[in-house]
Length: 587
DNA sequence: GCCGTTTTCGGCCCGACTGTTTTCAGTCG
Image (cartoon, rainbow, N blue to C red; front, side):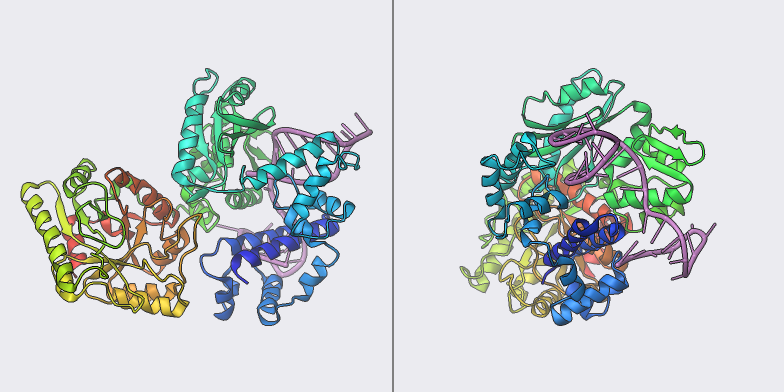
């Protein structure tokens, strides 16, 4: 069983407990949900934690659930789970994935209509709703019957939060809506919050906060958005709608004097907020989007900025990117938060594909060496590295490969003569073959300043073999950077299997760096691995992997990812000045 | 069932909205 399946299993246990007796099992339900989330967010398989006897490192998994997981890995069947799941039809766990269905409603419908086949439960229920059989059920009515039909249809089309957007796409939608919101006079401020503000690599829905003295007017303006598909909810201070494309947008409004508490509340993450509120309780305080209530006086104090809100808790302001309840609250309270890297700290971009006809087996860039370079100057970089893919080895002999690389180098040298304001490096992105050998030979490698190595074929290898392959590729003296280390493509494929303990160890020992690739569908390394890499003293470098001049603006996404991984300026190699950087590259 | 900045026992975030209700349950974030 993989993480996704085990996470779902634990969530099902929580659902089962909710159906059995929500009050009695209240805290077990929370515990199982938390354990489920922990496993869902892991970057390596939980089974590895079990094998290495490291399950106790995971927060939210205590003695009891740990014992059940061990039983799961050893015997497959878990007595406690079987007891909890007994009497609950499988269809319930299928139906619950459809928005609007919680444990209670799903269970009631499955039982009432005897939906025994989990594979067809959703469409069976749809038919029953269409036949008008649900409205007469106690607790249901005409409206909920038609809502069910619509929910199922939207779920099938992947609308709402069912599918996640990559970050730039979500930002684009948010910016349009914010621009529209600002045409309303009553809107004093409007900001994108939630996972968008935390710069999460994928975003389920778009959260927007507005400061206004007239929430009614703001909400009525919001739901009149010309590109809306439908309004899902409309209350006094919040509203939700689907915009064209089926993307969900949530709105919350507070007066300007409470905007700080609203920002804090609506930025999340959920687990950060829960932890912060638990911390506040110990101080006799109660937090919400309205402000802070003191237990004794019950009077609410309002905060116009987030800084003042955190300050009221005697904590430093916490950058949104690290609000994931992984220790940031404790450090904010002890005033020991790290100074995270910023976009302005970046002094160079080393992973650039020009259109120079180097005849690679992978893709070529769209803009010339000179065009890319001019863009780099515009970004005020100190140094810049060209790293096209190596010439295709199936179509060229070694000497042809050498000739192509030399030709590119010659062109770079020509341009270097005319260029004073920026230092240029002659790099290449070289494939690590399944054997672990680099795709090009030493003669070709010798004419390069260094190479970026990466895996572009045969992804399905065992973890140990893939780790050996990558380490073998990185072992070459010229190989300094491992590009997009996990190989994941967001919304497309998970990464290949790698033993990152070994990779980290190798990189530290041999002074190699791991790339944080800025490409929005990659964002690779993932944040959690960035954090682990830093803890292990592994050097990192943020590269755009640009294939056109406009791609070079993607640097901000890599920096956000680094911030999510708690990276400081000193953790990132391309914040170094040229002399220090080149010393590392050639070292 | 988890967890430790008064705790290995006794706590466990806080609120909005909808539909079916006649005061609230269910779902969501």
